Every structure is written in C-alpha cells, then in structure tokens.
Amino acid sequence: MGSELLRIAEGFSIVAEGLRGLAKAEGGTKEKAVKAQKQEQPEKAEVQQESPATLEGIRALMAQKTQEGKSKEIKELLQKYGAAKLSAVKPEDYPALMREAQVL
Image (cartoon, rainbow, N blue to C red):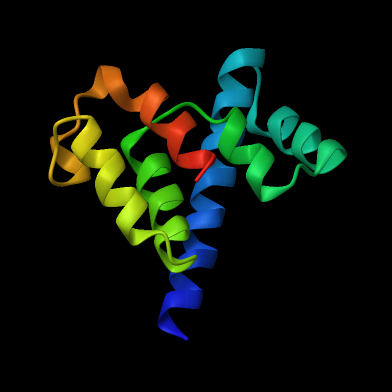
C-alpha cells in the first residue's frame, strides 16, 4: 500500500511541475494553468515527456520503472552516465537520461 501511495504522490508531483511550467510560460496566474490542464487532461506518460528534466522528475520516473521490474536497466543506465546513484548524475545529463529512462 505504501508503494502505491508513493506512486500516486510522485504522479501528483509531476503534474504540479507541469502546471508550474505552464504558468511560467504563459506569464499568467495559476488559474490559467489549471484551466489549461483541465482542458487537455494529458496521460501520465505525456506529462513526463513534457515536463523539464529535473532531479525530482527523473527520480519519479526511475521509481516507476523500478516498480515495473527494470531495476537492472536503471542501474546500467546510471552507470552509463558515470554514476552509482541518481544524485551523482551531472545536471547537464538530466535531459538525455530522462529520455533514455522513458523508453525502458
């Protein structure tokens, strides 16, 4: 049950991050971003692809992939970027890492 709640919380975090990005892009209020979000209602995978590659977003994606049984692939991917853990990955590698993790 705890892991399911964590997954839900991570999903909400990704959606919130997308809403913040919309609000900044529009230069408007949170209300505009909320309206835009309600109109489009993208799937969870679409939100991940559209959101900027942040440490939190990558962590959520990797947690999802781990729960899908892809722990070995995640470890190999981190090693490809010269890191034993996510916090050791260079921020400039985040976009590429996120793209590769999404296709696992």
